[in-house]
Length: 407
Image 1 (cartoon, helix red, strand yellow):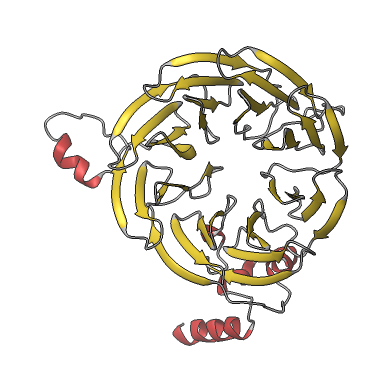
Image 2: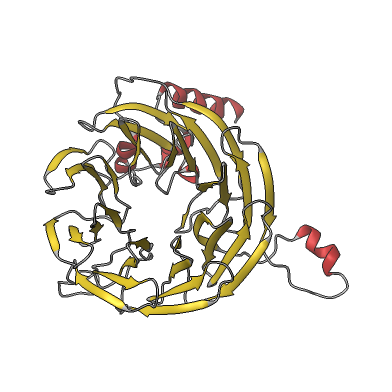
C-alpha cells in the first residue's frame, strides 16, 4: 500500500500541474487547471501570512479584508475578527462574535469544547469613523472599535447582509437580500431611512454593494436598475433601467446588478449579470454608453482604463470614456477569476485554485504569477485582492490572509 502511494505521489510530481487529487478530475477540470507558461517579468514575494479562523469554506461569500488606520482587518464566517499591523503583519487583537447558548450550570464547562453558534459574517468589512463595520446572514450589523475590537453597537435589520456596507457622510448604508437598503447612523446604529426595491421570484445569491457619492447612495437592484437615493433623507433622486429582464423562463430573465457602482468624474459605471455594462451620468441618470458584457464581479478603474472580469473569467480593459474595448485575456477562462485590482502599471486577479496573476494594464499580458493556495480549491481566492502601495492583500477560502509584495 505504501509503495503504491509513493508511486502515485511520484507520478503526480512528474506531472507538474497535476496533483494526487486531480487523478479523479474529468478532462474538462484538468484542462481548466492547466496554466500556460508565461515569461515572468518579476517574482512576487509573500511578506507575511496569518490564519483567520476557518475562512468562508464553500459558502457563497463576499467577506473581504479591510485596510485603515495602518491596520488590516479580517474575519471568518463563524465570527472570528482579527486586526494586524499593515506592514509587518503583527497581530493586534481578535474577538469572537459566535454565540454560546446558556445550557445551565454546566454551560461554562461544556462551552470549552463547543465552537458556538455561527455569527455567519458575510457582508464586509469596512473601516471608517474609528470603527469596523460589517453585516451577517443573520441580519445583524456590527460596529467594532478599530483599536480594541470592542463592540460599539449592533442592530438587526430585515434581510441577510451579504454585501459590504458603504460608510460615509455619517451613515452606514446596508443593502439586504430582501430588497431593502437601510441607512444607519454611523455613531449609534439608529435607523435613519430605508429604500425598498422590487425583488423577482428568482435572483442571484448576491446583492449590490452601495456607493456613497455626491450626496447620494448608489445601489444596483435585482431588477437591473441603478438607483440614487439622497443620503440625507432617503428620497429617490432617480432610477435608471440598465438591464431589462428578457426571456421565457425565470432563469433567462435574471438581470441582477450585484456589483458595487463605481463612480469617477461624475460618471457611474455599472454591469449586470445578463450582459449590460453602462456608463451613467451621476447627476441626471442619463445613460452615456452601453456595451454587452456579463459580470457579477466588481469593476475597477485606473486612468482611462475600465477593467471588467466577465462571467466566464475573461478579463477586459475598456476605454472608460467611450466603452471601446482595448484588450481581452481569456487565458484564465473558467477559473472563477476575481475582479481586477490595479497595482502600479499592472492589474492583479485571483482565482479559485489560489493563484494570483499580474497583467500589464497596457495589453493584458500575464507577466507574473504566485501560487499561494497550493492549487487547491479549498484555498481559492474568492474576492478582489486589496492593494495598498505595491502590496497585494488577499484572503483564501480557508481563512489564510496573505500580504504579497509586487517588486
